[in-house]
Length: 384
Ligand SMILES: Cc1ncc(COP(=O)(O)O)c(C=O)c1O
Image 1 (spheres, rainbow, N blue to C red):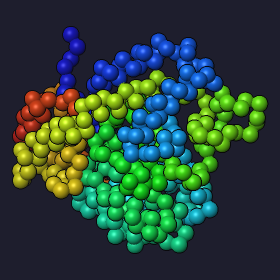
Image 2: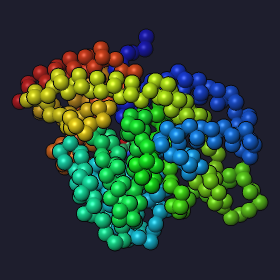
Image 3: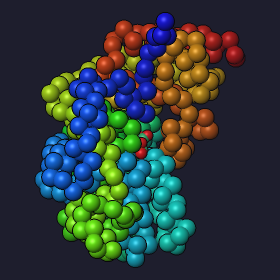
Image 4: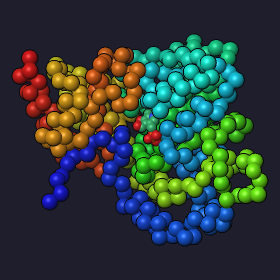
């Protein structure tokens, strides 16, 4: 018999996927002979329809400026390696994921660039004023993680976008943890570039995502190759969407991501938010003030999609290991690919235990987690 487990690691990847997404994957595989004829109108029309739906969901008016990638990592790499290489300075925050920090570090080395990493507070909130104060004459762009994958804290993107605009600096937002959890109105907020992933809260499959690049922003493509378009020309096409979509695309994954977006619209974002908030609040209400638990949480700035904590005398990875192996509860322990934030949270060197319920998580499952955490506290007390 299959072992039952409680899955509380949706910030890594959402699980399970809605039936509608499963069906979209099957349908796409069955339709494949029609799809792979890349130059054919059938394929173009389908991809364009998916592009339009996803763009609308993210508040992007010009869907032609939304390009599919293998995820946020590729989307961010595209900008880091291809946008405004003449200007040297980049601003980012201590809350970033390695998908920003490592390409940034790479750019600093190969491009002799220079970066300011703006600090955050003990819950992962970055003051927009600190970003303003970091702007220099040769700042190429600002890159900000919309919602921390460690604490769930949401940055004030409207304010940061206004500062960027005022100083004529572009803003790249990493929406990996926010898309599908928080309403994103990219154009309204004044976001210049938006990286998103398909496999987290958009309910898509792994290896999907994209980048929105506002009209007029010129970026050197990361890849060139076949596009099924203007095949006689050796010069790579500059037209959208081909310019950033060389090679055979992940049609199945894109169809799944679009089905995930349709699912969210059908359920409504409000209902999804409400459900996750209830589950996260159960945990916060239970352990707030408990001297054995340290919560890394902002009551006012949290997305209420995840919660990070630590248990006194117990390392985060050990706690996650015990939860998985003794209680069949899957959470994540450690640095969560965000190495810099922990200095500000006070969770160095071991990181935190992160619990991220999903839309399909039940209150009963959260109660199982709470009971297991009480047992872990008992275990930790014996280690004193
Ligand atoms: C904040 C953040 N940025 C970027 C990524 C990378 O996303 P992808 O898996 O689409 O490359 C993640 C995934 O863990 C993330 O949480």
